[in-house]
Length: 454
View 1 (cartoon, helix red, strand yellow):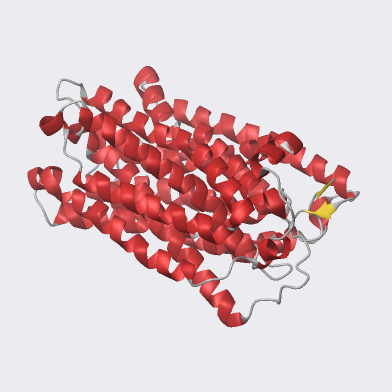
View 2 (view 1 turned 135 degrees about the vertical axis):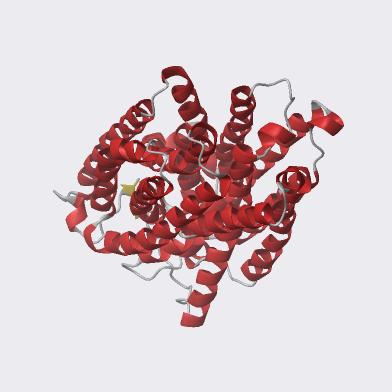
């Protein structure tokens, strides 16, 4: 018996109305934007504030920065655990309740970071509690991404999964813009000493509150038509099933996304620390540059997601990977001029290219797994890749710069990730060709070219 992964039959479930689709779009964008806002507040603060606030003054600037970036990595390690926990819950009980719990967790953790005393007040407890709260943020985001993506793609009309998935994906650059803007405003309204003392805390306190709006809107929706269609079917543990039945797809998903997450965090957190710490560019300049880069993603994400509905996800992905490989060296050559305009071009182009790949990821990962284990499979593939490619990227970048003294070592790092991704895209196309019987799966509309499962 076979079933097509993009959507089990929705027999008995009426198609959503236009009004309902508008609510889905608003709820998805708001949920993702607020969660990413909270998540990126941490990465921005980890580059600009936390080394001075939460770590001993006996640390050298490099040691404090590496320690701060290590807490980012810990949060990323927690993300696949959150994906497994909430993927299991979301496949068994529904996308809607899983999303609600992740929103509450993120709000509580972000607010708590905003009131956490620094090293001068509580000593070693400061970095320990900070790390624990980052773990909670990682668990929350690990569960939210899959739920928000499925909320969008499982409501999508036939042939529009890429377009609808973009609603979820565009929340990342919006959240990044909001978090950078919040830090920019907080820094501009206070002097340096006041900003380190309390100014940086205001965006965290606000972030813990704004999630409530996203939660209220999300609770007004019904669960997705795809989930409602299979809700009454008997289910075994979705996480264990997807690990046992589809390990190859999870590994392919990890490899496919590797350079997307890695290059994105090189362009954001890594570039922020490199620009302000090594090159001497101002904090506000770098925050403005990253905000402009996020705006460029707001253009590339929907545009190339829609294109993926027409020509196939793999072709769009390959385009993005090739451009990433080509841009890896010019990006740092421009950055190393120490000219704000050229550094801005380096980051904006790099982030635009990341959006080419990031946009179709929602539809691509949704199409890899059957409905009854889709939340678990998509979340594990995406979050495990982020551990390797995203979470450690700023740490690896800073270590490479310290060890070699050359930014070209980071270019090599990005190129290696890109080549791995190209290899995994080749494996994905081979798998689809074997399972669909189509010579070139991307010649078929994506809704019709998805893999089947026994």
